[in-house]
Length: 199
Image (cartoon, rainbow, N blue to C red; front, side):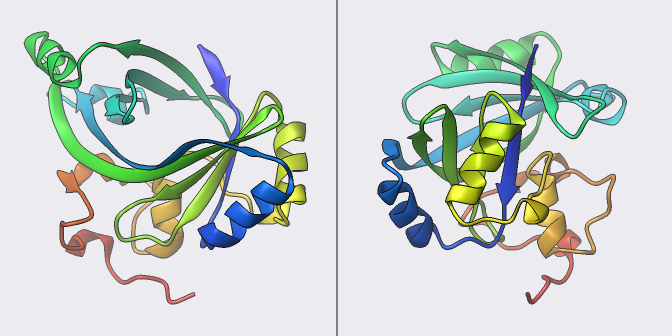
């Protein structure tokens, strides 16, 4: 497993970030595209409940990945990922060995590279746009964040759940997005998220 070293900055205007990235000489690697994923677990929920991990199949537009993430003692995750040939076939394979799909999710993502660091512009249903900066070391991520005008004290770490918790304070610490069967741009806001934070 490799450590996934990344930081998120929330409630960000993507057009402003694009302009700053271009000024820094960053390269647009992949334009904004729709991504879909299916989250899997055993019927008893032990991947997420006991191991605190996440197993997903994701269609990234140009490739299909299978990823397992698990928490580390620090604020980052360990990540094991590989590419596969077919989204539908991988879903069927997981179901054939007894795993069950627990959540179908979609988001949009645009990917830039700035030296050794990857900057992604993310859109998820029901939350404000944000960015994620990922790199080989925390210092390189800090440097990139500063160059883009972000305060490291505002960084958010961990899974996308933390983005939702920042906007929906009623979402409990132990709740995960995998408990929502469908997360899509066409789906209505689930009542379980509660009221959105106004700022």
